Image (cartoon, rainbow, N blue to C red; front, side, top):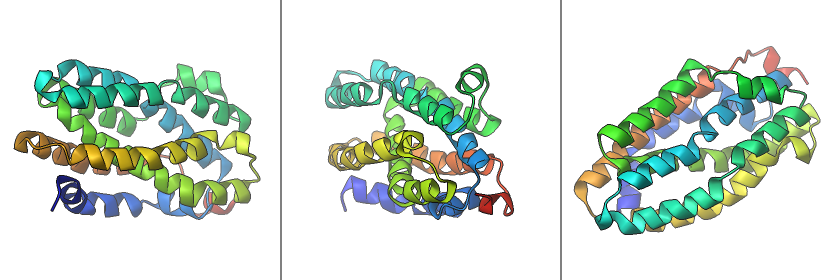
Length: 223
């Protein structure tokens, strides 16, 4: 079994827990309100705005023995820079207040997830960051390929309201293939353990982020 295969196998429980969250299940079928969609985008802005700083923090802590992973993070940083602006555009085009989102604070669940990864990078093993990559990129592909069209149709939203999901999903399909190859180059057992540990934790923390998004059964069918 390759390390990537083991990583997938050992994060199955967290992946299933995330997929079972009502906000995700209903989002994938388009059964959410416009308010729920804007609330999702708001939390996405608050964690995506930390993506490049987290990558930069991890890169700075990697030593020369991890040079190939520093190079990979350079590529990720180039790709991810500015993605939060896509989210703000979608919020505005969907009827939300982009300035209020920028000035506002994330929900506690979002803050806990981001803080956990910063702390892990700083105090434990920066290679653990790649566990977060698995969770976020895998989830965005699922939401983009299954949910974006359904939400757009049910809410009557145009492409200018869905740019983060559709564009990010397309990018992350390519990223996941790159990520698989990269993970199979991780041969240090401590690094492997760190990546698995962070992935398991972030699956659960990300599930809490989605659970924190206001969403009721009644609102789920308001178009």
